[in-house]
Image 1: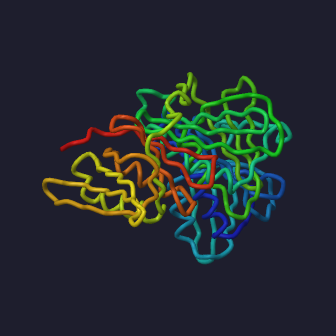
Image 2: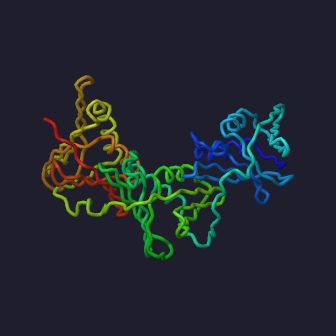
Length: 376
């Protein structure tokens, strides 16, 4: 193998795939990145057997070939090189990769590419084409609600449901639930899969602004989800199991609906969380309807025995009766961060019933938050 490419392209490509490198593995090759020539480009691939990421970068290919290089050594080296052309040549007999750039000359001991796990091949025609910007927003609004506790593996994933012209993403961790729907440009048969939230979070990270579409494929009987754009491919193992019936958790009515400025509510919650950190992030919301002369109010308060207390008033349009309810304010901050509408609605029923947060003017997203114990 003999190839050359720009240092900045190589560095960016390694930054995309390196997160899939196995940190601890009995297979040494999983700590490596695969470099392979592919139709006049250079393919970089890494996998930990649960998640695999490939990236293609422009390169001048003088000799075809493939090799795996130690990820940490290679990433650190490439990042230390000047912004110039990087030339790489493989000595097949000794499995040594010579890396040259300007005045830098390096030899790296490698592992044969034959030992690297093969990536699945899929026919892109069988996949579903999605808009990159829409998909990234959907992912950001849902993965925050997925569990990080491996005790219930299905809750560490995101349920993807498809059927007709609709795709729904849902995630829940027992304390909150995020549901996001999207209309598809084409009709699809009914199907569902649970994709690890970490894999979708990585997908949202690696999809670049310059790409417009990504193809999602769920090959039958393979237990995998494959996402492919022009320059990037992500392969994830699916999670086996049955996702809980999340629709039964969503309240179908409310007794009080408060419409607030998203930015004002977010700032109030961030301020409350400074004091709520010591009290399991618990903050109290007092919702008060307005009168003909006065607007309604939502008062957010947090108290910490060591730090002090915080109280913020936010103007609101309140439909219904007054209510006191407590939430994990960090959950509120996280969901408000991913809502892009000027106003947001908070729907509540009672002190012990879950609250629902929705962007005002959009029907495609909702977030359910379980209440916390209301202290005195």
